[in-house]
Length: 173
Ligand SMILES: Cc1cc2nc3c(=O)[nH]c(=O)nc-3n(C[C@H](O)[C@H](O)[C@H](O)COP(=O)(O)O)c2cc1C
Image (tube, rainbow, N blue to C red; front, side):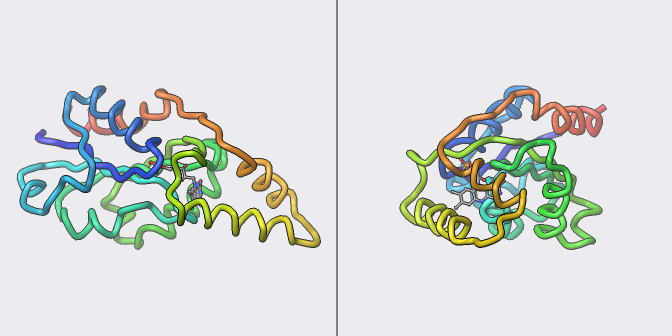
């Protein structure tokens, strides 16, 4: 199968996962910035990855425009791998029911990197912190979120790519 990994990254986490996946599958990983509909047309499978921005998959709208063939999507995020309900809710928000049937979706826990965030991203995080700090009756989720976004962390783990890699290998078998 002629396949390619395409990613959009801001702070580098998704790029790292994209490169691990490409290495495991023996294909190339490229930034969406370098891609065009014309270049992607030749591929039978595009594996697309983007970070979670307020639950939305970064660059998903763009890749959907660039490529209409067979696609697999992975999302990286600060949300822990075990938070399956939140991850499922995120998938439901990013895809229509029809898309969910034809686009396999995978989640890979990453982290936060304040040093590499863009000024806009830094501001968004600041607003989120302020909003949480100002809450009167904090729920357990609010407190957990506050702890999670307090500073940079990196929880990337190569083994999180395994379900996606398995899925592609089965497709090709
Ligand atoms: C502005 C902003 C919003 C974010 N929102 C979420 C979120 O809703 N859920 C989540 O799990 N992670 C969230 N994150 C964390 C990123 O999804 C995570 O760091 C991701 O791996 C970034 O990918 P990148 O380094 O490839 O850009 C957010 C990060 C930023 C900067």
